[in-house]
Amino acid sequence: MQWWLKARRVNTTLLTSYAVFVALVLLLQDVVADLPSFLTGGDNPVVAILMAPVPLYAALMMSLESRLPAAEDTGTRPVRLMDAGLVLTVIAAAALAGTVIGLSFASSSALAVGRNTAFLVGLTLCTRPLIGSPAVMTPVAWLLAVMLFGFDHGHPYFWSVLPRANDDPIALMAAAVSLALGLVGQMTLRPRAIS
Image 1 (cartoon, rainbow, N blue to C red):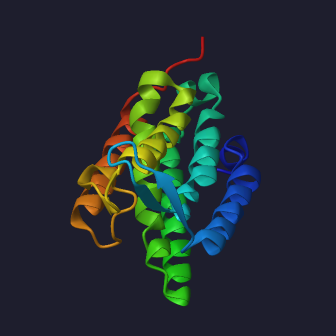
Image 2 (image 1 turned 30 degrees about the vertical axis):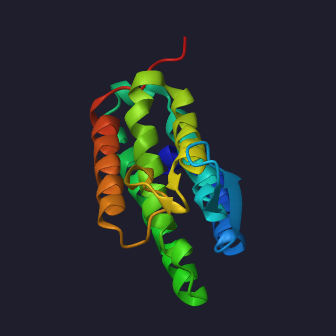
């Protein structure tokens, strides 16, 4: 287990990115940026905290990509199961940080950061078997699409997921489905090899 933690860079990369994530949630919790909308011609009030999960999920993907294929494919340890546990632990830690900060500062946007992290990690894991390590850019493309096309006169569309209210059932279902499909892909499919 200790060698797996070192191989996945949990003590260095993931803990550092988690500290950056918590700092971003603290700093950006209710900061709103008015971005242009390509659909309505007006402004989109985008909460800046939507970008907070980026360093965390990027570090998680870097950890998952730091595998040793020969040793892991021939070994007897359940490495894929341990990787799935790492994914769930990171998402639980993000949800915990968002909940503590959201309740402490009465910030509804901070409360949704765990759901948003689960959605973005699930999205990345869904595309990872198809495109390999460049899948880390999939959530960035989603974030840009949401920021530029995801609002109708200041109200988020149902598909946008991230800016929706913390208790929105559509967003919760999308995050759960995205994460479940991503974990199934993580457990059953091999990531595309770098060529």
